[in-house]
Structures are given as C-alpha cells and as structure tokens.
Length: 365
Image 1: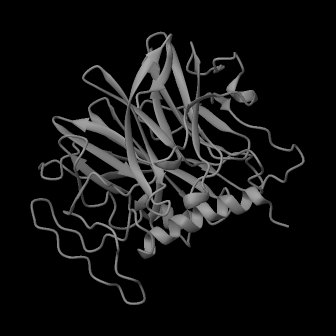
Image 2: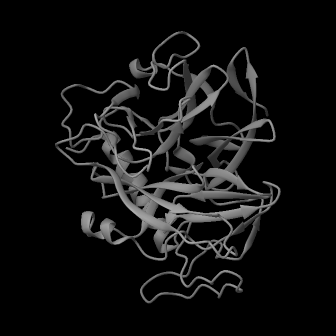
C-alpha cells in the first residue's frame, strides 16, 4: 500500500508534470524561444498539447508572478529569478516588483539527463544560482516519478544578461545522484554555500532521511575526496520504512545563509503543491559551523526535528515555502512561493525583507 506521504511526493511530481502541459498557471512550455535581442514569437500550440495559459518569453507579468521554488540573484542593476519549469524558467526585473519572462535556460534536456532518466519530460526542479570565482553557477534537480531516482546537475555562464555577447549556458553534468534502494536520501532541492574559508558545500534533500550536506571540489562539478557528508536537518521517519518510500518526514528545500558569526539553515516543512490544501511553512536553525549542528531558538538540533518558525500561511497565502535568502545593498530578503488564498491556491512569488531579532531572522510584514 502506498503511504500518504508517498502520495504527497507523487502529487508534487504530478504538479510539475502539469507545468509542462500548460494546464497549470506557472512555469510553462516555452517553445519556440527568441534569440537574444529579438522579439519573442508567440507560443505555438504543440499537437496533442494544450496552449500555454501562463506567460511566454518576452512577456511582462508585472507583480503577479507565477513561480514554484524561486531563487533570486542580481547582476548589475538587473534582478533575476530562476524557478522550477520546462528547461528552468527565468524572470528579470529592474525593481523586484515588475517582472518579465525570459527564455528558459535549456531549450532541451542535456544528454546525460535523458540517459539517466529516459522518461524525463524536461521539467527541471528547484534551481539554485550563485556567483563563484568569476562565473554564475546554476544547480538544478531532475527526478523520476514517485521515487528518489534523482540527480542534481550544474550549468555555468559568464553572464546572466541574455543580450550580452558572452551569454551561453554550459551544462557541466551530474554532480550527485540518488538511487532507490541504495540511498535513504533524495538528490533534489540543491543549494550551494561557500564557507568562511572559501570551501564550497552543497546542501540538498527532500523527505527520506533528511537534508544532506557534502563538500564539493573547487570546480563545483564533483564531490571532494575524501568525502565529507553530514545530515543537517530531518524529521521523524519510521525506521522500518522501506528505503524506496518517501516516508512521513515532511521536510525539504534546505538553504544555508551566512550572516555574522552564524550559518542559518532554512528548511520547508509539511505539504507543498496541493493548492488550497497545502500546509507548507518555513523554519530555521543556526550554527557556528557550516557542517552543523544547527539549533533552533529552543536549542533543539534540526537533525533531531528542531526548527523555529520563520513564516507560515496567512489570509493572503494559505501556505508558503521553498525559500531562498539573498542580500542586496545591506538588506536581506526571504524569497519563496506562496499558495494564493484568493486565486484557487495558485503558486506565486513572494519577497519579504528580513529583520534580525537578537541574531534570529524575522519576516517584516
């Protein structure tokens, strides 16, 4: 019998598949696409598919931005959002308020993805963007239906500006892969953190045995040797749960942010991707070391179920989660998606400034 939480994982993956068909509001099929500097063509209906209902490349979407699993970065005076979608969806803005849809990162899946996941449909999940040693690195996840048959890949670009002569995404292949029956963790929801010594680490995970942290080589393409792995956050999982089953530990989307003397680990708890029935929320803990342990306000280890609430659903959004934290001009922001209580639970972009209360993050209403 399939467990309720495995069904929740399956719902999440069905949700992403629907993104591809254009039957949901958000990151949609984006072919054909324009070349840099050209006016994008109108989206054409593919035989056997519905026409897209959401924005197309080149379209201004204003403040009501349909996203799932957003992350944000700024180059020069342009802000960019990367999120789950067909080939990885991208939006740009000059003010963090009015957004334009750009061409996707990938027009087709990298060859290695098709080899590892023959039934892959080009929906790439939960990207993470960082500037590291002169280049922009985009981590992303690909997965198979209902299992932890998952891979984290990485792509590189010299610039994020599509009209720049040097703009070109170079896929660098698979960094980490989880295999059902072998691994009690899931290789999705990646986030890069560089420690105070300049050492890169990748944290990731969803359900199963919790959120993992592993040291990377300087090229960000491979795990460093000798390998160093840590479990930085998790929730209770029945120890007799089969490794192929997601289990009852509703936790995912780790994001580590360094501020002052602490590393802060933000994670999402509970049910995502269920529209008005979603219960997603964001909790956090902190540590003096990137490897943890991370403790919440009550000194409970995140790896033992701890987590202090940062933000949850309200009258505007029934649930919120899959967060990222960014800093611009001395201000820190929490970026996440919320399920709109007034629009049938559709997932939309939310950006809130963070304040700090005695060393703990708090969302400014």
